[in-house]
Structures are given as C-alpha cells and as structure tokens.
Image (cartoon, rainbow, N blue to C red; front, side, top):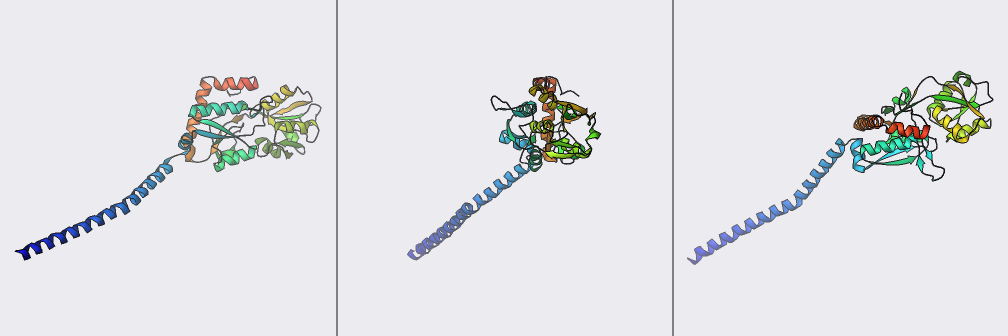
Length: 290
C-alpha cells in the first residue's frame, strides 16, 4: 500500500513539475515576443499613416504654414519704417489664407530666388511675393489661382528719350532681382542685367545713371513714385501682357489638397471683399480683379 502511495505521489509531483515548466515557458514566450510584435505593429501603423498624410495634413498637424517672402519689395512685402513690422499686400493676403486654413502663418524672409528654391525643395510650404505665373515656372511649380493682376513696366530717368519700348532695351543695362521675371525680361530684350536685392536699389541705380532702366511691377513703381515724391523717374513703357500673381507650390500630388484649399481660400477672400480691401489699403486701387 505504501509502495502504491509512493508511486502515485511521484507521478503527481512529476506531472506538476512538467506542467510548471510548460507554464513558465509559455510565460517567457509571451513576455519576450508580444512587446516586440506590438512595437513592430505600431511602427508599421505609424509608417502607413505618415505615408498617407499629404502636405496639407502635415501643415495642419504642425499648426503653421511657412511662407517665403522678401520683405524688401514695397508695397507687396516690406518693413514698416516706424515699427519695423513685416507688412505689405502679399503679407496680409498670405496671413488671410493661413487663417482660412486654420493655421498660423510663419514668414521667412529670403531673397527672391532663394524663396522659390526653398518652395521646390520643401524648405518653405509656399511663397507670397508677387510671384507671377509663367510657362517656365509652371514646369517646376504648381500654381494656385491668381489673386492679383498687374503689368510689367520699364522705368527710366525722366530725361531719357532713348527708351520708349521694351525692344529699346537691346544693348542697354537694367537692374533687377535675381531669379525674377523682370530679370528674365531684361535678358530677353537684349539688356545686360545687374542683380540687386531691393526695389529701392534698382531705382537708385537708375537715378545715379549706373543702369539705363529697371523693369518692375507697375504697382511697385507707382508706389515708389508716390512714396518718395520723385519726379526724376518715369514709366517709359508698359507691357501689354497681364501679370498674374499666384502662390507657387512644389509640383506633385502631395500638394493637390493644399492647392485646392488655398484656391478655396482665395475664392472666399475675393467674394467677401477681403482681397479688394487689402489691395486698396496698399495700392489705392483694386488689383485683385482682372
């Protein structure tokens, strides 16, 4: 009887030992593998979410939109001489667009060509700087709908009678911002172009006779004349083609929804009179209707 009890006890203990080992092995398996599997699943889900987020979604997640602008081209983008605050037509339009998107505008002041390059490389989300739509630029950027219209003009000394058309720039010298449409126009018409950073510098070079002319926006030229009161300069020629100002975005489907959202914002700002109001504030006229 004792022998049977002893054998029975041995069998029970052995079974318990085997069960315990099996249980411990299962616990170790769960502890070692589940966190790793969970982590991999979370990473995969995060990667999928990031891959499906487009530019607009990332902007909204950040709560801000970075906007490239020169800050030296009145009245589009410049610093108030009294407060040094960044102001201007483009600055206010861009801020109004950002508000429509539900994010804060973050302005980055850079040279004109640097702003365009930054948009194409993703350094900036957009650019607001009187960027006109051209066939060449449209190969690199996807433009929004236009929000303003203008004309390019040739500005010379009031006493200069040798230039009365763009064709007369052939063999002459001009001054303009690097990478601007106006620089390209000067080259197109055969002028030797000097690159400068600000509108004031272009006018100064014309005034002191360093260059024969500058090509610029008619709105900017008129603002300069009115602000400085100069009578030593004149508009010698006006381009018949309408200049359309729009927002350049990096080309690609990543910006499809952002472009649509900005177009919607522009449409609403035009409909409620905001664009016109900002235009009259800086130009004394509405340049937002074609």
